[in-house]
Length: 167
Image (tube, rainbow, N blue to C red; front, side, top):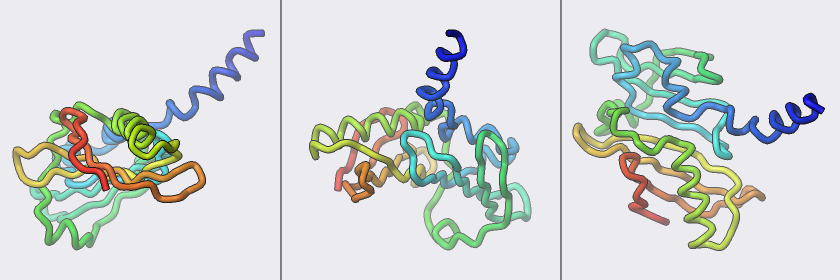
């Protein structure tokens, strides 16, 4: 009987056990955690398999470094030539301002899509950025129905969970 209960728990809890963005960021070396300028992931329902971090290493000659993290382990670390980061106005994300992690952002999107569009949320593509020092970090979520059809883009303040844009 205990085995059945454990298997049932494992089957229902497995999606929850995947890492959120903040938990995944713990895999990064400290010097890069303070230099994250972009966090992204695909196919979150709610948590994706892999998280992608772009870090601008201003403290060294390493430039821009890209990380892929799965289950709080770094799968890859390599120099990045991300032109959006090179040319854009991306500041390091102040993680202490992120009060709504990716799991919370997914839940906000799930409710918003149900209320605004009347459809179920299947998965999202996540992007977390901060446009300027002192600005609030923003989640951008591209929302998809269970059949894979595109629903829309939702932008959420990571500091409060307020929806600031729906397209």
